[in-house]
Amino acid sequence: MKTFESLSSFKEWRQSHLNKVGFVPTMGALHRGHLELVRRATMNGGPVVVSIVVNPTQFNAPQDMERYPRPLEQDLRLLEDAGVAAVLLPKPHEIYNDDYRYELSEKQDSNVLCGPTRPGHFNGVLTVVLKLFQIVRPTHAFFGEKDYQQLKLIEGMVNAFFLDVEIVPVPTVREADGLAMSSRNLLLTEDERKLAPKIYEALTTARNTNEARERLENAGFKVDYVEEHWGRRFAAAFLGRVRLIDNVAL
Ligand code: AMP
Image (cartoon, rainbow, N blue to C red; front, side, top):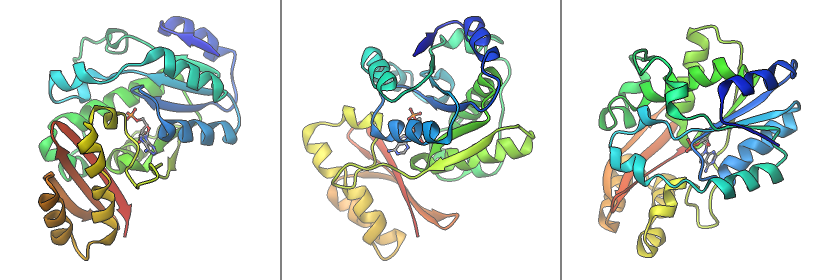
C-alpha cells in the first residue's frame, strides 16, 4: 500500500493506473462502516484509493474539528489489511490551494434535515468531494447511506456537473445493538453509549415521526429533527455533546 501526502506524487501514481479506480473518501478514525465501503470498492475491481482528510470547511464549530479522533497509524493498518492500493493524506491547505475562495453550493436538498442546523456544512462536503474527484479521477466512488443526505447531494452534484464517476451507495453498517457505526461514537461516555441505540429503535419502531421524537426526548436526547424525506425516516439528536444521525428506509 502506498501513502501519499503530496498531491504531485499521487498524480504520478495515478498516471500509471489508467483503467478502473475505486475511491472511498473519509475523514479517518476508521470503523467497520468505512471498511465495508472499502470491501465493496475492492470487489468492484481495480485499485482502491482511500483519502483521509479532516475537512475544515464541513465543521460548524472549531472545537468539533479539534476533537475529531485521528488514530492515523491504526487507520493505515486497517486499510493495508483491507487490500487498499493507495492512501491520500493531503493537508487541508494543499486541497484548498485557492485559500478557500471557491465553494460549491446547492440550493434545495441541502436546506432540509441537517442543513438548517449546520450552515455551510454541505457546501464544505461538496467542495472537498469535487476537489478530491478531480485529484483522484475515480471511475467509481463509494458513499455510505448512513449519511444519506450527503449521498443524495453528491449524486446530484455528479449529475449537475456531468462528472464522469459512478456513485455507489453502501447500506449502513451497525453495531449488534443497532447503533449506526460512526467515528463520533468514540466520543460517547459509557452511559451515553448505552442509550445511543435508541435512535435506531425509535426510527424503526415508532408509528410516526412525532412518536419517535417523543421517545427520544423521554430517553434524554436533545432532538434536532425526526423527519421523513425520499421514502426514508431520518433523525438527528444530541447525547451530551455528541450529535448522532441515522436514517432507515420506510
Ligand atoms: P466519514 O469518515 O464520517 O466522513 O465517512 C466516510 C464515508 O463512510 C461516508 O461515505 C460515510 O457515509 C461512510 N460511513 C460512515 N459510517 C458508516 C456506516 N456506519 N455504514 C456505512 N457507511 C458509513
